[in-house]
Image 1 (cartoon, rainbow, N blue to C red):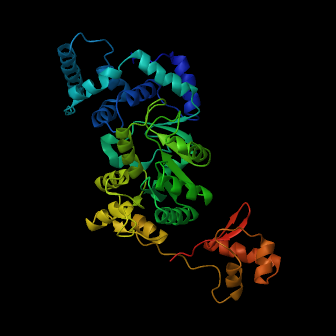
Image 2: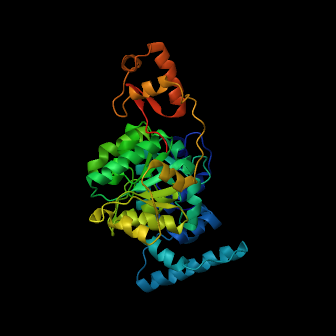
Image 3: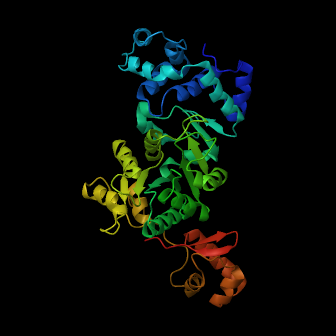
Length: 417
């Protein structure tokens, strides 16, 4: 590969050793993938097609032109020459050449400078992130539904194993101007999902997004935040502490390089990833023009089931949800069971281990609280059962999923319907 990214091969090798621990990948392909992710905007279907069918390095060599052009006419002629070279490469492989290469080159060419690519690699080298590419064990199977519009790679901070939780991930999105009602419902749903082992995916924004992330973390559950800009700085600024906590306890990902600003059109592109990474999308509260409706539309395009939480008919913050329901684009969801059924269909629950005829179990449950942790001794005192016996009863209830043990003690979990 002839593109200059400001690093020698040995420097790049050290970079991959740090960004991709324990993985083996071709240096030229990795370098070209990172370059492509900087040249093309997220979801660029022509770039995705070229990388998939020709390979990242081969396709980049065919299109990369760093020189300055004297006129627009000269640039257009070069675009035609690039398209011809790509079509010839397709012909040599016995493939049907794609349309749109010429237009794609005109989009990418303004960024084709060694200085720009060197800055991308320098910021990556200074980051504490991890680089994921298609084919990695952690790569989400959900991205397959995006086809040529799938991300070329992902920059990640946190537990990358969570990305593979596609089958047990739910995207929960909503308005930034959340009401008390919306925040309450979002919290209940996110806590319930987290307690049952589901991963909550959202966008880290103000309002509903932040609420579901916080709720999942509070329940000691799993959550993923998908960013529209580079991971060198988090957006929105007011949620920096929250997103940093997600990076420590969950996962934060972005498909754009470090240093990329989160522009409005990148938020729209980001939404397709939120939809693809989850087995269902739930819109908790959203106005008619909310970006959450855009996420729902992406979900519909790729065949993900969509759920919408109804709100007061007088509330503008729920008008988008009501429109989704009115147009039969979404199913009404009101409980955690509704959300799980939306994603996986009706799930038969196993028979409980706790004997329903044994009154000791109900006494222990009555002694617990869903919010305030209590020690075994406190539960024993309230239930009137010995401490050792109480510990055993709690263990059975834990297996049934109706209690949870935290660092501060035991709490009850809302019963499944």
